Amino acid sequence: MVGELNRILMHMDVLQGVDVGTAPAMDVATNAMRLRDDMNAPVRLNAERSAFAPAFRDGFFLVPRLDSHGDAAASAGEQDL
Amino acid sequence: MTLTEPDGLLARSAADIARAVSAGELQAAAPLVASMERMAAVEAGPGGLNAILCTDPEGARDATALVARRMADESLALAGVPIVVKDNIATLRLPTTCGSRILGHYVSPFEATAVTRLRHAGAIIVGKTNMDEFAMGSSTENSAFGPTQNPHDTTRVPGGSSGGSAAAVAAGVVRIALGSETGGSVRQPAAFCGIVGVKPTYGRVSRHGLVAFASSLDHIGVFGRSVDDAALALHAIAGLDPLDATSADHPVVSYCDAAQARHERPLEGLVVGWPAEYFPSSLDWKIRHLCDRAVDALRELGATVRTVSMPHTALAIPVYYIVAPAEASSNLARFDGVRFGHRVDPGSLRGMYEATRSVGFGPEVTRRILLGTYVLSAGYYDAYYKRAQAVRQLIAADFAAAFADGVDIMLTPTTPTTAFKIGAVSDPYDMYLSDIFTVTANLAGIPAMSLPIGRIDGLPVGGQLLAPHFEEARMFRVAYALERALGGMAHQ
Image (cartoon, rainbow over all chains, first blue to last red; front, side, top):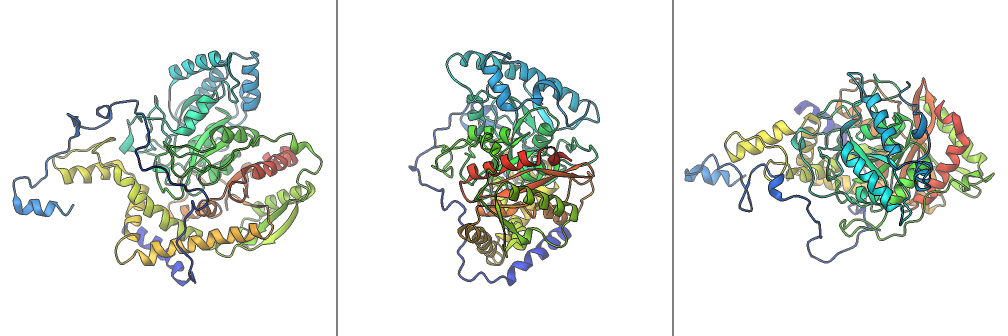
């Protein structure tokens, strides 16, 4: 995988020699984008979240405990996640 | 039985089927029955196409009964017309797996706007179709559910990533299918399978319910067995949608214009651009010849042909394979085993993230997430991502300059080769190069389509039309005329 990624990145190097002048970053939706009111879109769900969540209880998604639970030093390391 | 020549009902156009159902000449369930029988025939056994991932016969039968009742009060443009939907577009009763183990049993709690609009037009959803995992690929070999075969030669790929939808249309299971495009995933399989594939303007069709891959490049597109089938389908799904902030408030006109193509010189006054960079000296001379024949046909229809230059075309693949993986690395972060989808739980939080994603994603998706994360990382962002976005602007400017200079539409090959053998392309970058003529339209956001222009050794070849933003009606006008002018030659 590393060798493949390096070979792919080698092909990307051609971009370093392109004169981009003052070209701005592309905004593909310049002609189409519009703003909507800052509110949740009214998407009606056909199923409760509990129906498709791997683990769900009392309105919360459940996840496994941290490896380091109870170990303060290791727990600080986990916060880097 | 041939795999590419449907008989009976499905040999008729979608418009004709809908008209017959609306007029009471056909029972609303008859096209569905024909489609299911055809599907059973082409999918059967170990040699089956593997185009369809799942079906819902009971739901489809219920839908035909509903269509029959609605016809009493309203006119339905797609009354009783069976369709299939790519498996990254959300449907309510059928799973939406994206061809991935990580969503192997996922059923969406909401429906994509494009699917809703097709149902409201009277279409019947027959099933979901196979695809490269998360739409990352050009051959449909990257599906967790096995590769799809090309109906024209079952030892070859149908193209990708929407290969299941293309194969289903080419095999006569349906006249119309939904696909999605990020870099050519409708047009390239349409070319490989000898059918019509359309990518609309960015914003023309709502993406609500399309599982995001690269949000500045993603589109929902349509397949049709003919130009008219594709026009009917696009018209049904186009238009503003409040559920998609990128959908455009731009007038939608009918794209169905078959009558105009019957005029003697329907393209009188039209200027067709011939971009030299899409016809490199390395291009297969047989593909070049078929494009030349299509250009000659356009001239006879009244068009003027002009050579144009698109000097940044060769940079499109490097730009695309920086921008798309960068956006994918962000979009696919949501698949972590917490809220939906597959979870592998070795007993710890970090272990769950790692195991879920390692087991859930296949090698191409993993490759692109790593690539995208790298080009966005501190120290490399300017050199890769920022520069790619600037060059993307230059590619879009090439199109803008040509169209501003009086070119109305362009014609190019859709792909540099015909369909290749399953397993023949193993190097990822070689696979990326099969998108070389299609990614530019996604980078620029312009509409484009592929339609059959001939065959090489029995394998279909597609010609690509590229038009200015929101000029789908013009693109279809040219496609109708070219399809009619080429006639049987398009499939020889």
